[in-house]
Image (tube, rainbow over all chains, first blue to last red; front, side):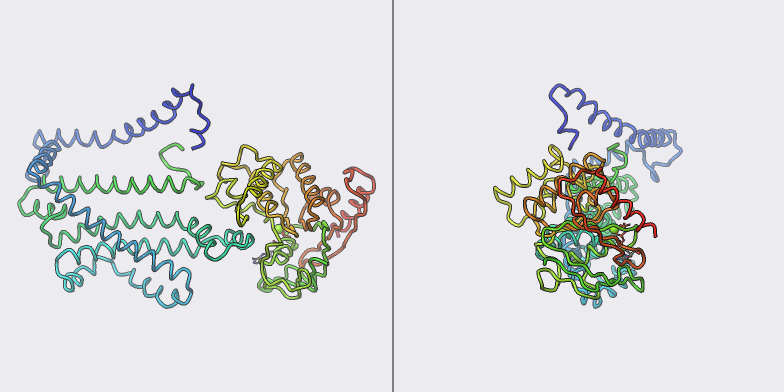
Length: 278
Length: 239
Ligand SMILES: Nc1ncnc2c1ncn2[C@@H]1O[C@H](COP(=O)(O)OP(=O)(O)OP(=O)(O)O)[C@@H](O)[C@H]1O
Ligand SMILES: [Mg+2]
């Protein structure tokens, strides 16, 4: 921000030097390792170290992806998975934020329900799966519920800890300057909780993807998790790998977007951002 | 009679920070609190601000007991306490209820006074310690309080900025007749500013001495009278 402000027109070249080169460098440096792995993997596959029915070559996986795409199967699968995560994430986050705000600002409620939530948290969320399937069948409802439960806990815990650990010093600033309770919340508490909130939703999103896989493995007729099962049942490791790689890409892209929003909104934070040299 | 403290005692889990303080702070007066680190200066200032109500004794403002923070009483904390998500300008404007043309001008003027011109759009993370402190002072001053409590406001500033801001305080005091209570470690600063210097003893903090300084303002910092008072304070503090 400040860097841009200080730049003048005649330093356009400098601008390139400052921002583009490190980015390119970062991209290049971080791709060295995976590229080497890919080449070694391809090479070993070609000379027959890996059997193709166990671990197909990268080129074979790519070809499989292309053929799945061209047959029109791939996009619906991606979309199905993505929508499940999105809806589950939306529900889980909304419930978590509402509850954590209520619990955080209402001591009675904290005493009443927080211990229960803390206890439920100890149950590995996947343990709920059989019960949900029993209750809601194997359709979309149980899948979305599962994802929502997975997303709920990290968001709830992070936002709540953000609320209860707000520095008294800032609240005092609000008090001294005569802020109403409403302004105390909007001008001090919300911005102060924002960092914890982002940590929560980013962890939550990660768990959302974990749970969508679990849900789709249980039984689904579409989705990337379904592709995994399909690949296993039809002895097609390339299909499995296509699905795994797509999960990696989608996860990275969604988390990257959240991270970008976070950096925009939390630019005031005095933290070092690792790896970007800022 | 503006701010009165009677038999004020504040105890933090069995540790008595200040004990049996009696003090009447008159309107338009500048009082400096001197004392060793940990003797209870900040504690006293916080009770005067209405932020800390867990005391024994009485604190009254304009003859009514102080039951909480009041718009008429402003405080500059020992740490700058700028809100990190607001830039300098937004931080300084923070206490203003309804920003209008006049207050916006006022904010600009105070940014100027404290020497932060051109820094208004920086965020606290990009400020030096002294810059943050100056922003915190401006934030309290723009609200035009009747009583201004200052907790070591100039401790992170270089000598010259400090002198400038001392004069700024005097100027504001002269213009608005603001009552000021200021904690400081700098005896020369107290001598230059104060009508009365309150010396606190340590553990528990009690009033050890109150020294009236009659010399008219503007004072010469090196005047012989003041130096004699300084000697006296130094001996008091060493006991
Ligand atoms: N919130 C608190 N809880 C417990 N003890 C406290 C608290 N605040 C202050 N004290 C104690 O009260 C005493 C006085 O503290 P205070 O902060 O008023 O000192 P001070 O005179 O302002 O010191 P300094 O010059 O270092 O700022 C100290 O012994 C301190 O440990
Ligand atoms: Mg102090």
